[in-house]
Image (spheres, rainbow over the protein chains, first blue to last red):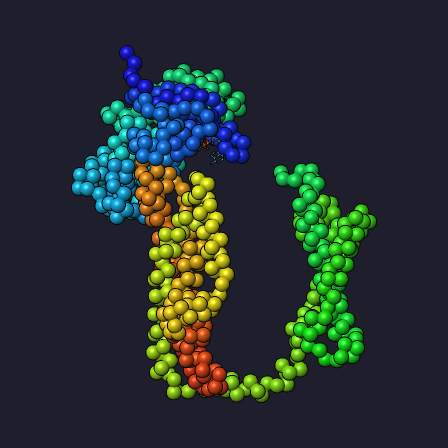
Length: 259
Length: 357
Ligand SMILES: Nc1ncnc2c1ncn2[C@@H]1O[C@H](COP(=O)(O)OP(=O)(O)OP(=O)(O)O)[C@@H](O)[C@H]1O
Ligand SMILES: [Mg+2]
């Protein structure tokens, strides 16, 4: 029994105007409820792949669909409706620094809020209650009135998770969500992403460069190298030889030496 | 990394170089003729002509042609004579040649001579006269004495009109904020990359604003005085036009320097264009916008005195007749008032801006 398909990527390529081929004929399928890790060296195309899925970047060739609906040809209101299905979490958190934590979470509801009301930050009481619930979930319930830039990195990322949750997404795209955090804080943030995956059944596609995190949280992983999909499998399939083929012969892996 | 092998200059570059050389050589020859007529043959010409009269008599066409001819010859004999100044200007000199010390090149000596010629010609063209500068001081002494002994007669009127000036500058700034704020988004490159239509609007808007700014506020004042009549409102309108144009430039440059991250994040929630601007852009630019706006008010206070001179209201308006009548004591009072106001505005606006950013 396999779960229905959440995301399909077919023969996706992205060539930047300067001729760099960031993605080269990438195909993959993600099933509902999966936690897919995307591995690869810096510059291998991880961010480009994630940003093509919600069309922050327009792909050059290929087709993407999420939950059976075509993203690549969507425009205007249709595209915005698709984006609502996918919450995004960024390495740099990307909160609106001068807004309060609460207003940042409420911005997750923009896709379903009238333009005029939202221009004046007039959200309904129901939205406000929901925002509070999202903040409670990530353990930030008492910080709603703080300004976003007054928080630590780990706290900001938890607020960003709450903002994504506020979208009521069926999919979460996380682009190196813990790469700019203290190693000690990484699990505290990853656990919240994992909870959304396990408890809400939200499909997660998460680029990571930390192999320990991949082994711990992912249900499946793919690896990119120079824009090409070079490996795909269960976390435990990524043995030393595979990793060397992804990261190059020179790479060293601490956990291999220890085990 | 760049420029590994010397790239042969394109036809356009070579044409530009030739054009520059022709202009330089023609100017060189014309300056020579000017100096000749002014210094060597002053009598033949009928002595003591003004600079303008000599300029009217120069052989522009003939020497222009000669300049072109010499430039062509120099380009043709490049092997022998070395690169021309025009080629250097167009960036078409080979690396090896541009590294030769200047005093070993014809180009270098030509440039040196050209600059010296410009200085001597300039001295005569602008009719520099150090004699009168140092001997006629007593004529200006009266003015300076008046300025140093301000008369109390216009103090009250001056203060009243100074208040009008401050409000005039304020209203011009206030009226400028809404249009400048709205236009700034369309004039920001990072927000107008998506579609050709947006790119066109960007270019058109930038050009229009640059042209508007290039026209002095004084000229705008003349236009609006004939439109709404002499008085402070004409001054408000003149400063308003100028303020819109400069605020659009300052605002849009600020928008161009924002962090893209929050914009992407808001876009990813499924927000529409206006929502992305409201949440992803506006919060980042409000403090600098405030700071620019206060700075603009400051500038408008300075400008409004000049605008008053031609009838745009405010303190400048009563300054003009007193200058014409030579009431230097009263002029002194008004100038002092303006100076104090500008100085205080400067301090206050700097202080507020520090606090904001
Ligand atoms: N906006 C852009 N314009 C031009 N080239 C780009 C742009 N964004 C990314 N690239 C190029 O595309 C390639 C893939 O970049 P991408 O950001 O997807 O890599 P990544 O795997 O996310 O790397 P990192 O781990 O550093 O985030 C790189 O060579 C990069 O230089
Ligand atoms: Mg990246």
